[in-house]
Length: 141
Image 1: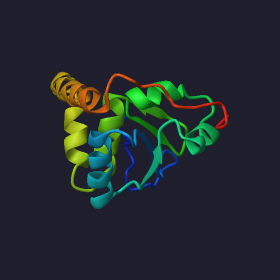
Image 2 (image 1 turned 60 degrees about the horizontal axis):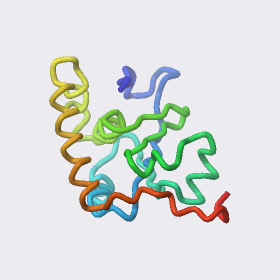
Image 3 (image 1 turned 90 degrees about the horizontal axis):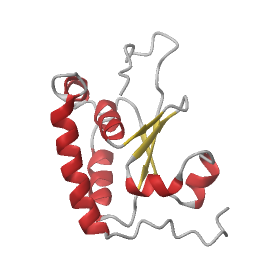
């Protein structure tokens, strides 16, 4: 994850918001959504169900099947974060967790963060089931 070096927004690189594509059929994702929404946000998080008609319309270039498998975050500037980068971007957006996200993204801690995120993903796969089909019957295209 590229950490914004100008969180106060005094320069041109300020991230104004993140769009979080989450699997609304997954209990782990729904719980994470509620938790993230309940925290103070330095960067506003907007939640959109992954592979939904809205997600497809807003982000036509994304692999929407992949967004059902891996949490995906898109910045207002179009940067896409997936998997561990997406989780770290969400933490970085939160007032009480930005410092933690910055520490976890360092070379010394990133391997441990990735291990934890892989474990969470394994739980997610077990609760969601093996079917990650996007459910689109072409009416959403």
